[in-house]
Image 1 (cartoon, rainbow, N blue to C red):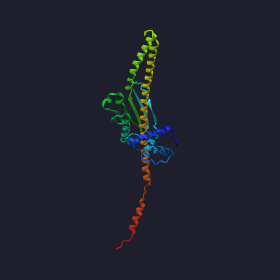
Image 2 (cartoon, rainbow, N blue to C red):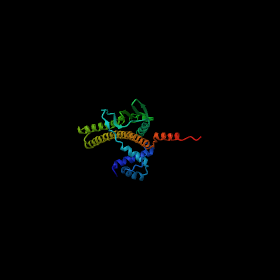
Image 3 (cartoon, rainbow, N blue to C red):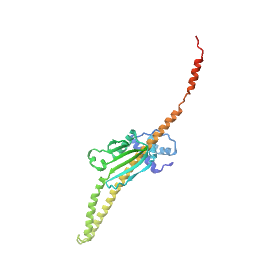
Image 4 (cartoon, helix red, strand yellow):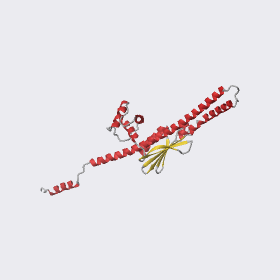
Length: 277
């Protein structure tokens, strides 16, 4: 399928589906692009009923390559995580509104916007019971303009997930005490049943802890994917701006300019004609 891998095609189709659902489409319409990659993609999106404008939008967004891939920052904080990435281009009000909508969709909550000299800061502001949950009220996105580039920082608290360790620790402690009592003969003559039960409890605790760790890893991966989406939008916006300027220049060059001397010659001829009295 051209140069697009199966994974890239799947990402484009998923993104195009979201764009179609939420009506996002902002890059200049070049859905008639004839390169092999996009035409191969259209064969798939046409079959599943996705308009080419949204397929092209998703394709352009995938093509936006950030200056630096977003990476998780090791801030030695067990209770939070941050992802930082850089993209070429700056953020204007129109683009920021698009990025804000993406953030609110991702975190499923509205947010409060703060504007500083060279920064946009979006902070989640959930309503109802969600505002008491750290994972819901902690998300924050900072867009900082640096020498024509944009630094994107996405952060979120992990306290809610960390609290899930407590039941596992309590159960593991109980299992360990039962295991110790069995080993030191405090459970009577029947050794096998308590020993088996204690081992099962300890094993379950280990798998439970692994489950919580996997949820934390997924949370970090989701933040990375959100960062990549935001960076892609910034890159795409820069490309769109450059393309628009190029089209304007082409239109200006295409205009026919009549030299001033032609008007002058015409004026001379008119003045030189004898007046009929």
